[in-house]
Length: 215
Image (cartoon, rainbow, N blue to C red; front, side, top):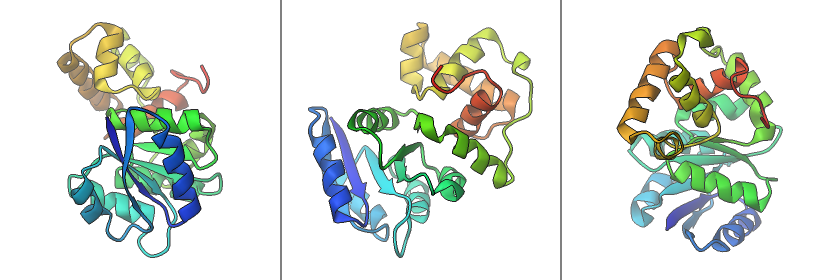
């Protein structure tokens, strides 16, 4: 059962998100909050596996709330955004967000995002890849410049699956590897690309053409 905490300042948006998520037998909404001020305390109280959080809220916004939550050792965060939120995308990545989904996403996409991020993967809505890349560069953090040729064939396989949001466990299952072996490959990928985290490696995968949107 995936336990989800919803954080959005608009009650109708929260109600809609909760309705979609509660339609799934493996997802349970365990809490709702209207601002980011007490997210850390709320998460400690309801023990969610994932926090779905609006990136723009009055007072403590989603970026700062994500930073506080991750610094406290809290659960992964999937931020909810709109097409005009491009300038805050990298700030959310920098704060530790593991997923990005549009508020206008289909119920199926939202559910897949929740399952992916809760399972330890990274999720970026396919229509947001362009803005994510632009935001990444605009904030002075270009994608790693190392050539894809420096990665082994197996490392490329792992990177492609990472870029599609697969967790280490899912990658292990698909490639018939031990999860510890996948972790070793992921560490090697980070080292060779000069990437500090999965988000940076994923940006590289799309920016270099290793993975293509919709491909």
